[in-house]
Length: 323
Ligand code: ADP
Ligand code: MG
Image (cartoon, rainbow, N blue to C red):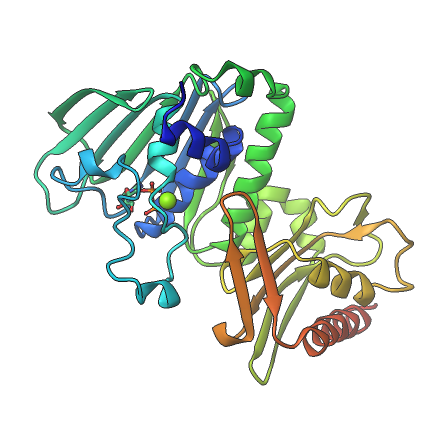
């Protein structure tokens, strides 16, 4: 028999990378400036996310793992103005229902922290504990009670690759936050969190690559475009190193990818792709995001104008940078 949380877990937590994403988004929602992620193996044995965010008060901690116990919507009208990444209150209970979970948390104004432990969503232990302000969430034995899901997981390379790719993109979406990713003893990357996009790119893709990128900054009416793009002789065979961020959210959009490719038209052969990190800022009324548990869709008001704008700016920037 499966609980409602386990069923929801089937949607929210497909694999280790989805757990990491939910936990890190919670840390960002809590205003963290420093987030440390530790993964063992493919993420099944251990995922730990430590942040210096606002913390969870001792009274609220047991509630945080209950279904729809979000602290992020107080009234239904809030939905329209929602700035946070999470709002369904489904992630923690879903993750708890399919793992051994420990939450250690302390708001800065609280003198003492609390630790809450659960197995398969059932509370094992709740006690006071000394800890720094912020939150540490440890997920062990992911999918221990849903063997079918566990069997579907791929190798360490695949699962950890997905995690590190996703975290790299989040880190480039938020250069103001310091992210570090550890895979047991090794630091995979660490971004400085000083608000400089190129520093984050450099931490993730390496200094040598970052140095070759061309900066792009342009404002036109309500659109603002800012980022780094590779010269036409620095290309990849996949879109893996293309990251598009709209008002701070990582967006996978065929429209944006197309617009980027068109900007490189005739400069690079078909089926080769630039390395690119683009932040697009535009008024919220200019687009619509539909957030599903597993995917995110975006629709722009003025698709044609927007894609022409991006294509043009990339083309101009490339031409201007020619020696
Ligand atoms: P949601 O993010 O949709 O509100 P979650 O299940 O992801 O729901 O989290 C439940 C609640 O637990 C959040 O609303 C928040 O109050 C609290 N919480 C979770 N993680 C953190 C964290 N890292 N720091 C502070 N509060 C947190
Ligand atoms: Mg959340």
